[in-house]
Length: 621
Image (cartoon, rainbow, N blue to C red; front, side):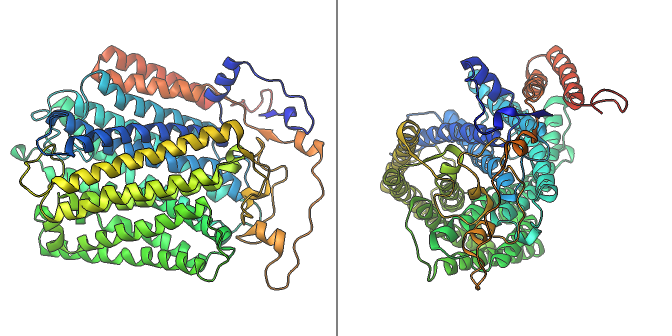
């Protein structure tokens, strides 16, 4: 542990060389830098997934098109779904977990900083491994859900499915490491006085999300290991001819897959719950109920998975049970929407870009939820299964929900992260273009599904009545792409000549707005004492019941800052992540590579674990 004298006010800080700056980012264990790395990487993958979507929409823009082949189309929708779920939305949420949770709970870092860095580098290894499949000309082509028996060696003899299943296992390791890290951080690292019910709602939704991650990912890990054994070692877990069962895959996948939906949406719900109060100048209406409903969503999320399987013939008892639980899970979601609307009701509302995206989230997610509740009815589900109606539904939830919520968080916390304000005019242009493009893209797909257009077809005849709305949907997709170009332009403009942000530009309510923008390495010179969920609001304006604002504390001294100890950088996380990727990719190349990669992984794991270990009687004890 090192004392950072450079943190002291007025201390002279040497400007690092280019390679020194690169090395500092590659070896960082600072939760804020790791959050920025997660966000930047996720946005790049988001753009890649978006390009895949645009190519698919161009292919479907007119009937009998031959822009891409059927095989290429299979590869595109498989990689689009896999990229958006595992490499874009989840790590975008992780960016906010990393950056904001320690700031919001009054901590100086996460519980395990080096483990945090390791989870990022394993995530990068998994993402790059999946995309190396393009260079190897073995792109995954079995859908992001990988249904058996399409994924068996008999029907997918190339390495395409191998890239997919191994890549997801790497990403699962990253998610599990991060999940345990944030659970321990939230349980153990809260500032004095921050009881569980005083935690900000975003931290609560993140807390529930981590439980979902550590409980749901083992299920898909088991499913992937069984598939790996089937493909590599000739077992027959999913082969009905040998007594296996392809429905075993569906159960294992969806018992992960439906909690995964809430892993993707709960962080956005938490962001919206933080954005609305400052812009309505009111506390969140019924905050404890919002917290309880989030917990109930996490709990019920494990009991609804088989509504994805109403068409497989489970029988009336199972259909009835999962139909009821699917209806029930709509209740806590509806409670949240009521609370958000009541927060706005009667408020002194400031219409700025973060609020626009939060309002867009509420409207679009509500529409997606309504089309989702329809699938609680098995007869309705049977008609709509594997049609474009389902494509429209889950995009209203995951794009209209998660992406709008994450952009709301990006605009809201951008001044805290960078110290500069994003351009408000460009932000509103971004919002309206994205809202327009989103609805033009996906709303017609409800109708296309209801008149019979199946999912995952790469072309169609011209006499089916699908031509016009497919063209409209494609135009909408390019409108979304234009909105993202506006956002990128906003980021570039802000980086070059953005307005400097104050520590508290939105008149915020929680602890992250009480420190400079961007925060110092140590976050808080003094660990704060918490008295309320809206602690900063209490400090500024009192409790609203006649209580006076709290007196300002004495200025922080240089000696106090000099006494702060922060974890030093480490290069073992990136080396360990690369060694694991080398070992796993060796399964597709050479057993020698597996052995070398495995030995390096063991060596680097030992070095990682023992980096700061000191014997009981050794120096530094």
